Length: 292
Image (cartoon, rainbow, N blue to C red; front, side, top):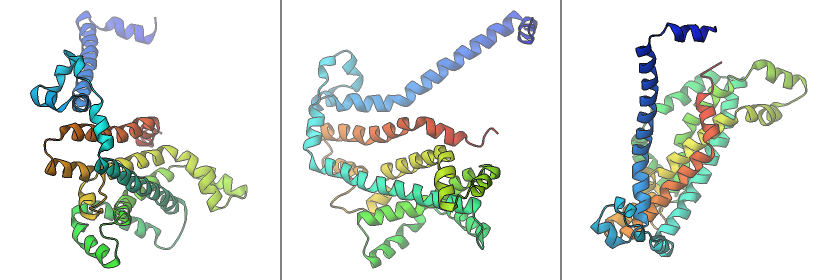
């Protein structure tokens, strides 16, 4: 008899029943939590597929008993609304460069802080870490004045610059710690083969740091895409991102739910798609270094 069999044999019947019941109860609890977490998304999706009159008269769950309420007319109205479509384009124009720049600059800086020797390296890294505690709200007024003086206030460049500046401290901190876990022997072997710093970074460090870089990209993308505070202050009022555009629609046309519901769902489903597309890399990056 194996050790596992001996342990199971020593357990009493009530203990084994309690263990099995506990495992089943945990699964049921996790399923209920997952369903509860998905309920707002499902409700928003079903509301976006109902007419304004149906939305005003009954709840979204009514669609299960009356499937005839389903219609894609709201999405047709969304495509005809130039404010929403332009705001989606503006959001993409802001989010993609802000994410790419943070990932690229953060990767170079993280590698430099991890494996390159230069005067004051540790002190500069402490300065970067200290910037993590600076709240965004504290910098809004002084940065707005600075952007106004240099002519990038209420421009796409200004929004991207703000997001890059506040995203870099976390990016450098995350990637530096990840790159520092790479075995030194591996880098020294590459140097003995004649690899310079650029080749070492592109051929050795980047492939090994893929999970952490993917995690950083997802974090930055979600933060910039869902941001409203920075966009409300620094973005061009004529071409606002989707978060500001939806807020303006609520303020000006509070009863046009046939546009707001599909617009809100589209703005939600895009970052969800990005997250699930890189889910494996995200989990690997988060768990990196937890188990050696």
